Amino acid sequence: MKAKRNPPRERAVTLRFVAEPADENLYGKVHGGAVMKWIDQAGYACATNWCAGACVTVYVGGIRFYEPIQIGHLVEVQARLIHTGRTSMHVAVDVLSRDLRTRESHATTHCVIVFVALGADGQPVDVPPWRPRTKADRALEDYAKRRLELSRTLEVERRPWLARAGEDSPGAFPENR
Ligand SMILES: CC(C)(COP(=O)(O)OP(=O)(O)OC[C@H]1O[C@@H](n2cnc3c(N)ncnc32)[C@H](O)[C@@H]1OP(=O)(O)O)[C@@H](O)C(=O)NCCC(=O)NCCS
Image (cartoon, rainbow, N blue to C red):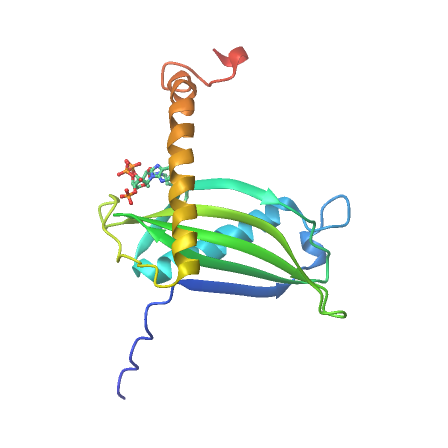
């Protein structure tokens, strides 16, 4: 049988499913940890689909929960590549919640995840570049670049914290030092 041709490289992945009672928190809404897991899964699928290889999360930036998700709502997790560096893929994720009876939809959560492609030796490898073609995509890429700058600033803030949590010290909290 003739092999099926691979579909073109896609920059977006959307997951859709109904929020189940198993995802419920103590207050009757969807658990934040469940939402974070869905975000990671959609982001991972999007990044892996783009680089067609192994990749890992290197940074999750500023996740914001705007509204709760109700059990029984249709959850839509939209992941979209908005910037590529040499080895990194920046994926923006939006979570929407839809009441299936009224069809009313709300954006509930947003974040940007940075994935790094890895070679067989576990070291970062180059990713296929993504180039914005529309005005909206250029705005998204600028957003990713501004976030990267913020993340580098945070990295400087984090350095002394990580140094304290090194091998010579059991942790960074004062009581552990
Ligand atoms: C991924 C890993 C191999 C990268 O190694 P590293 O020595 O940090 O590699 P580099 O410094 O070359 O950085 C790799 C890329 O990450 C990006 N990066 C690193 N820190 C970042 C941050 N705080 N924010 C955004 N991007 C960041 C770099 O800009 C670089 O991207 P580029 O090549 O497009 O410029 C290593 O950090 C690692 O193993 N981390 C743990 C991953 C993991 O276990 N994730 C959870 C489970 S999936």
